[in-house]
Amino acid sequence: MKELEIRKTYRFVTGATYYVRHKSVHAETGELMVVYSEIDLNSSNGWGALKNETYVMPYDVFINNLEK
Image 1 (cartoon, rainbow, N blue to C red):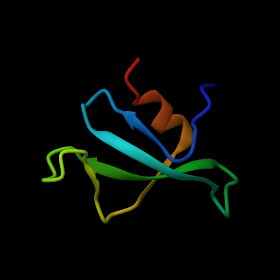
Image 2: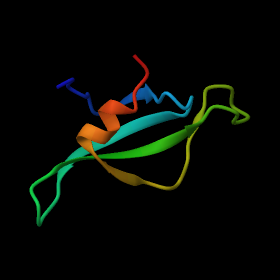
Image 3: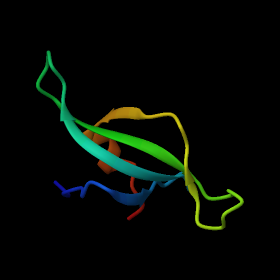
C-alpha cells in the first residue's frame, strides 16, 4: 500500500488537487481514514487556495483515486 504524507498535495485521476491534513482512525471500525481539503487552483493569488470544507475518505479509496 502506498504511504501518504500529511501536509502534502495529491492529484486525483479526476484532475482535482487535494491537500492531506491528517490521517485518522474511524472510532467504531478502526479503518484508516484521510482528512483532506480541496485546493482551488483558480484562486486569484496564482498559487491555489485551500477551500474551507474538510473531507474524510477511507485511506484505500483515497490511494486508489490518485493519479499514477
